[in-house]
Image 1: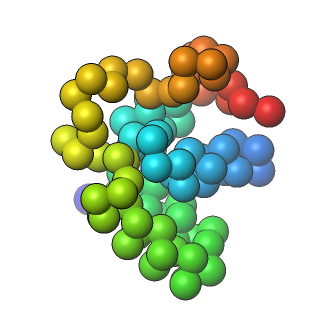
Image 2: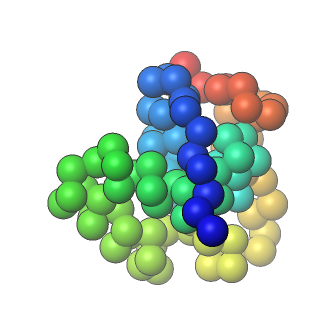
Length: 96
């Protein structure tokens, strides 16, 4: 069964890619805000980045540096965002 990735505006797509590149933003935050599971984020990144950039991103996500997976994250961090960032609500883009 394949998941259909819905169409996003250019601004939403930019935000998804930006969140995916941020080490401290877990995949769960992207799921919460845009309804995209990790496998869907990977498809979006593969379709919108150069091959070398995509490979670099995947390598970083799977390394010890990134905290994209909550299991690798420090349990003391219980938020999706920086304490100084505007609140994330639903599918509204909070930055910019």
